Every structure is written in C-alpha cells, then in structure tokens.
Image (cartoon, rainbow, N blue to C red; front, side, top):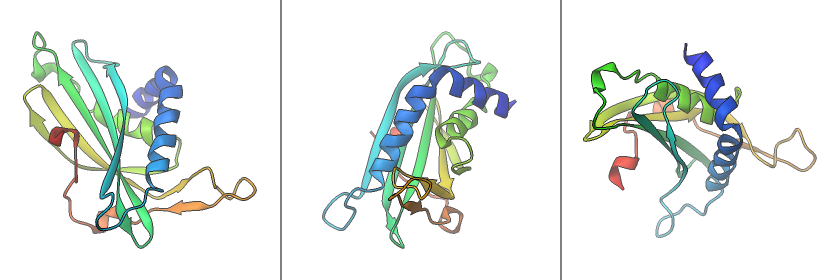
Amino acid sequence: MIGTLTHRIQMICGDELSMLRRRMYALGWQDFHEGAVDVAATAMARKPSCVNQGVSVDVVCFALGPSAEAAAFMISVAMHVHPQRSPGAVYWEEADAWAQAVAGHGWFSVEPRGSRENASGRVFHYALIGEARTPSSPRRRGWQKLHLPDLHRRSCNPGPSIDSF
C-alpha cells in the first residue's frame, strides 16, 4: 500500500517534489559552523491528503550541521486533522508515503525517527540515509557526490521539527 501511495503522490505532486528535493540538496551546501547556520529548512505548500478526507499534509525538509563533512537531511511530515474529522479513522501511514516520495526514486532510504501528537494531528520525523546525487553528480561531467552519514548511529532525537516553529 505504501509503495502504491508513494507512486500516487509522485504522480500528483512530481514537479513540486522535484523542486523541494533540489531546495533540500541546496541546503546541504550551506555554511554550517559555530556562530553561523546550525540548521536550514525548506517546505512544500500544504497539500490535501491523498487517502484521508478532512486531513491536510505539510512537508518540511531540514539540513543539519555537517558530520564528517557531509550534511544530514531530515524530513518532518505533519498530518493535520480538520476539526470535523475523527483522528481514529485516519490512515497515518500516509506520512511514510510522503517521506518516500520526497526521498525520490532510490536516492535515499527513509528511516522513521518517531512521531508525536499535537493539537491538530501528528508529526512524523524521518532521516534520509544513503547517498544523494546533487547537481554535481558524477553521472554528468564535472559533478560531485554529496555523501550522507549513517544517521542510525546517532541518537533517535528527531532534531528540529515543524512543531517548534
């Protein structure tokens, strides 16, 4: 079900997801150091849920300070339940599909880092694990790889989230 839903999200929001991914990769090139940028974020416009009527979805991507000269990327997916909707009938796994859709076609693997409830729904946190090819990818002349650390070795602290804004 998640794979089918991820494909549906990519079909409906493909251009926006591609733009969000490019902005996320650009965040990884920020000047992270003490006294400067600690974390950078980009977001996609709020979308209606693909399977839950009365639910909307916010997606925020974060680039955290470098570890071994690589940026770590996180995704937070907030699912907001409209007041007339019962949270008990919401298919919360849709958040996993949104994270997979942001990660792209095999560019990253998505590792859940926890969730928490808020007044209007739930926020799910994910780490992107693996190697991202940026506009300097070796598949094109003069491009380079952006290597990401194995985030599963870090604590399960999901880092900043849209809850903290």
